[in-house]
Amino acid sequence: MRQSHLFTKTRKEIPADETSKNAQLLLKAGYVHKEMAGVYSYLPLGIRVLSKIENIVREEMDAIGGQEITMATLHPKEPWVQTGAWDSVDVLFKIQSRTEKEYALGQSEEEIVTPIAREYITSYKDLPKAIYQIGNKYRDELRAKSGVMRGREFRMKDMYSFHATQEDFDRYYAIAKEAYLKIFTRLGLVAKATEASGGAFTTKLSYEFMVLTDAGEDNIVYCDTCTHCANVEVSDQKEGETCSRCNKGTLFAAKASEVGNIFDLGQKYTKAFDFSLHTVDGEAFFPIMGCFGIGTTRVVGVVAEALSDDRGLVWPESIAPFRVHLLALGDDEKVKTEAEALYTTLTKAGVEVLFDDRADMSAGAKFADADLIGIPTRVVVSTRSLEAGGVEVKKRTEKDGNIVSIDAFISSLVPKA
Image (cartoon, rainbow, N blue to C red; front, side):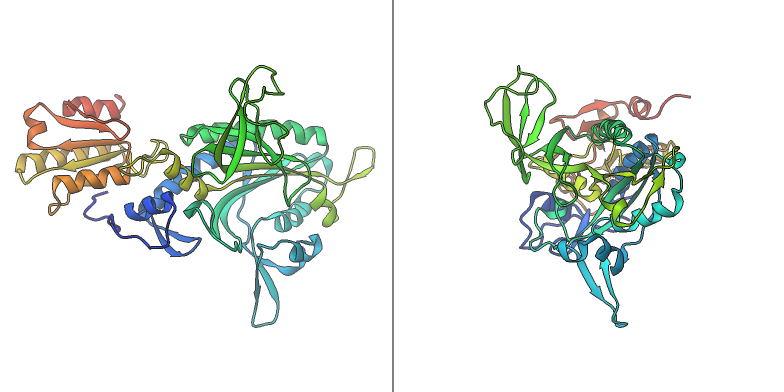
């Protein structure tokens, strides 16, 4: 992608009411556009990041047997009445049609997925099954805050599993927990599986996956020796105490942001929709359900908060919009020729490159934009670099760059046949 052709530009001014760091950076760098509080449009750079996040999530859900579907986000009123959620869920957006019928905008999909599953899971032999979708959700938050991390419209991966027994759910629960940890590692985040209350979904204990960040909305305590971690709202231990799980480590307090969760829904929804099956012995039972969520747009915000610095965004390579940011500096024809040739070579080899070919921008402005946009590797072609024997290569996470020959740089990115 040539930066001169990119739909967006970096900007200095942002909405005056935008106080969250993640939204400020994403707006300045041209990843998102703010429509109103809690609602953002994703622009070309933002879509590239979001798509990579969702593809990683998709790969890991497929790997544990999840099957992807797309569910409606405009819901009929009736299933929400059937579960009692029409009157009890305060964040539910309700819409009245000119036909005088009432609808809801999906804030979760239990009311839709359970009747779907009931039609296709007709025998205990069909269990277990897990289906998921990645799509938009809507919640009527009284006060949208934290930029893209907590909005009224957002994207989410929600998977729902169905099991014949509690033991089988517990087995799958452990598998999904490990898959979640793998996802967050691939996303460049260090997440802790945190014990928490199930909230409105269930009275049982659930897991929230938390990323440590000062911008976090949650307070947790975690052990410095074992994997024990708990939300302070459900923990009977405090900072400085010895961990009750391993009896060795010390508990530390931290602020964190939730990026995913796992709920044991039990038989709440299968009973509500009279979704029953029979065992091999003919005994009726209601399947056990699990719910597994990851806020994909929320991940964008958490990465922007947790991994950025005072110069801008710092994307992990796995989800960066491009792998390389190529800058051509000056009007020298040799610089232009070498930069164009490098861009062509890398692009043909399948390397994602954002090529800052803008002729009307100073070197300082190009460097500032590169830092703000946050692509992992910056490579500069200039008269000075060519005279020194190649191009200047600098990682976004490092302070200084190094001169590398063009052939060596290409070889570092393109595997030899």
